[in-house]
Length: 202
Image 1 (cartoon, rainbow, N blue to C red):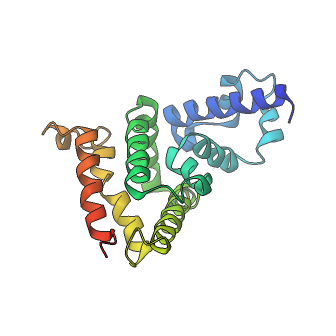
Image 2 (cartoon, helix red, strand yellow; image 1 turned 60 degrees about the vertical axis):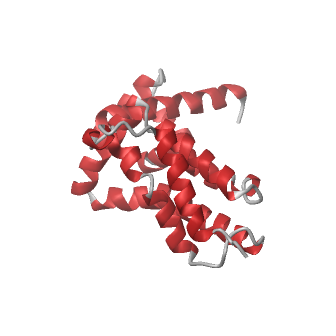
């Protein structure tokens, strides 16, 4: 890909994120994304992305920090659990503070209830790779002797689950944030609780 093509590719992804965030999957069209990206012809999008579904997939992949961690898993495998888990949690919570991300989350949750196929796509694109990365990371830490043997499928879900109320609080449940618990206070306590259950003390 030439520099010009690379720049155009990124412009399309940036425009797609904004369009999806403000209009949802159904409302964002190839035409509107092409116009937002400043393309002479929206059909140029198909040079980089064969379908709207693929464009959506790449848009999420380009922005989602947990997915980026999953893609670059090799660089994290040998790092200690507390460091990795705190870093992942901080990055994700910070990501969820962005207004465009919150808007996209609201729109997609509403659409997922009406379109099961979109839920399958989000699971395939985002949730499955992230959980697979966490399973791999925890299993590797078990092999290093840092964590005790356990079911990594469950620990992966448990780790993500510990942060959902904090991540979604500003989006759907602002009353949950009324107690003043900061993101940093929550993640420090949550990671401590999580690690007490899986650290190998022997």
